[in-house]
Length: 309
Image (cartoon, rainbow, N blue to C red; front, side, top):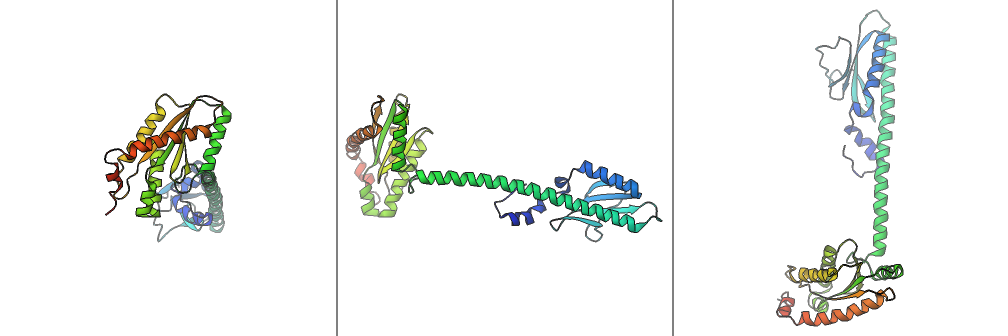
């Protein structure tokens, strides 16, 4: 059955249409009960689903009988004001007390309806509560994420990135690769294309950083157009390969206006006495050296200005 995230009262009203008779009852128990009822009252009984398909047949009186649930519906079995089945009876002995028989059959229908209602509400409530729990967990996850993440890019914001550096320092983890990533000529994009496009440039670079990062990488926006990346227990060449990938992804990014480009500085914390905050400053120095190389590379200026008509 498919369930949608709808209000409880609405789902209770609507989802009953997804239930068949066998969804609500133990059919072996129902058949045994109806068999006993048929023996006591000396009647034959036919129970169908809402469409008239036979579910339980007791006795021979209904051989060749095709229920017309529209014009001759028998006794309707209803749950949440919706028909889920039809009960037909035929008396075997004509001189029996028909009033008593009808009363007991009507009571049986009422019993089935009460049991069906109880089962339906219990089942739907259980599903609803499970869905609520999933939604609440997702809400909590989003709240925690929003508390730690930069609103524009979705990577960690500066304060949380700094907290993660302190945690790693206290844990005395080494080696740790530290990368400083800066967007080249972000001000050019802002001056020529405005705030909306320059913000989009930041988001483009952030998405590239996230796409190429492994699950244990820690990526944060540490300034307007600058990002920090931490790689705890970095393997040999891992940080350099990551830097190469993000530079290549930026250089090959297809856009009619923007030309994303980054400069990257990579350093390592190899001594537990060192502070990642200091290493991030060292990485910034290396980033500026890389920026000079990138901005003076052949074709850079032409690509940068391609969006100017």
